[in-house]
Amino acid sequence: MSKLQTISPIDGSVYVERDYATTEQIQQALNTAQQAQARWKKVSLAERQAICSKAVDAFVAKKTDIGEELCWMMGRPIRYGAGEVAGFEERARYMIDVADEALQNVSVPAKTGFRRYIKREAVGVVFVIAPWNYPYLTAINAIMPAILAGNTVVLKHSAQTPLCAERIAEAFNAAGLPEGVFQYLHISHADTESVIQAEQVNYVAFTGSVPGGAMVEKAAAGRFIGVGLELGGKDPAYVRADADVDHAVETTIDGAFFNSGQSCCGIERIYVDASIYDTFVEKAVALVKGYQLGRSDNPETTLGPVVKASAAEFVRSQIEDAVDKGAVAHIDPTSFPLDKPGTAYLAPQVLTNVNHQMRVMTEESFGPVVGIQKVNSDEEAIALMNDSEFGLTASIFTGDVEQGVELGESVETGTFFVNRCDYLDPALAWTGIKNSGRGCTLSKLGYESLTRAKSFHVRTEV
Image (cartoon, rainbow, N blue to C red):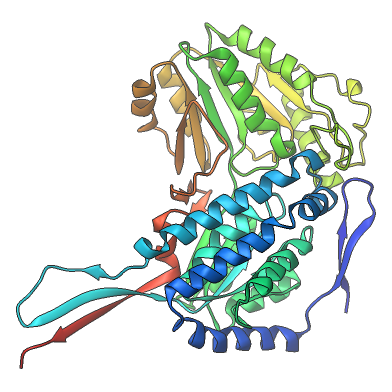
């Protein structure tokens, strides 16, 4: 059988190599998960919370090693590696803390002679399919509430970041999680489809591309199980005339270029009021020129390679399409010596004189490029923000917060920000509309898809 190989974007070397699970190993894992769930659901919530808290402690203790592994597997600069560990901890601990409220019985009005309530029961075995770009954050969004709710979890992580699955398992094992409650499988795409179709699986939580989401829906069709899909984005920001320009530049540019632009909720298009447009562009370009493109294992690097050479070529093709159609490219790639075709190293780019006839303004880029378009009114900006097949997050920068909130009511998005962007608050539902997917994770609502309602109607007087 072929092996899973993780090719590091730093130097093209094989960083991880693993055997794919056999058919027998996959079946055994699913059976074990199903059997373990029958026992785990009977464990008290307090005990589940205690074990999960210990797992978070064990995970955080390895943050230095985890940061180094991330930089080699997917290219994030090592100086930012600990940030994902902190985000993992924030989300996990929030979901632990809110579990009591989220999983409590739903009471109904009293009725003489009867006791009535609705219980939230675990759905069973949850299959989590996680991506490489934020490999711990996206995974823990589903894993932690699933386990706390009494489910068992089987994780299939990206072939680009297989060590992430192993690190999560290591943390749960250190915490004393019973055998079979959390497992991972290194499997192919074909075997992933087979697992979705397996009778033991009761829910699928997928984070990834739109085509990947379509595959999950097709594979699950006719099974009548829940499917959560967190897909792509082409997230916009609108900078109004009354915005703090320096704050807007700093925030949107970081939102566009952090993680080399490889974020589903990163800023990919910016609309700026004509009265401050030139100032905004000048400051944005100056900020981007200050990035240090380099190897992810270099502490001085602020912009690492994208995940693979083909991803870099895709972004280059978007930039070429835009320039051919009249866009202005403000960054000279030769000022970033590591930028070379055929490699994963790609210079950041800021484009102006852009419009929605250009791929870079409509097609998900997932790389270090952003288009900045001039607008003349709130109405024009909102129309352009909504002119997208995606709807994950959107941001408005303004000095009038209440007006910003009012405008947000007209923006077609799952999460709306005022004066910030590119952040997941674990207290808020993480969800998208249009081709950004369906379902939600995080917050108290994140438990709803991982549980099923069971009504109790007890007659106490006969």
